[in-house]
Length: 108
Image (cartoon, rainbow, N blue to C red; front, side, top):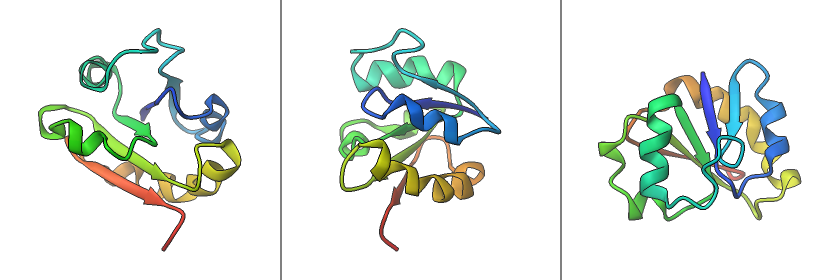
């Protein structure tokens, strides 16, 4: 599965997804691009977009994009706070639906 990590996520999180092809927004040269245009670019090459932007699903009509979105909810976007979410992310990756946002949080 091809995963794109938003630029607000520590790039070192990519190491946790060993069975997948992971790139970051800056790696593909898309840093600073607004969410709508970013999703247009991402849907052409990626299956899943992972972000910590909780407003993305309210600001964008995700149904128009052929990419699944996973929104991480942790106490911060620091690597130490996001790493514990990785098992949950891996568990739902195959079920993530294109055109929808799935929230993964440190809570239940």
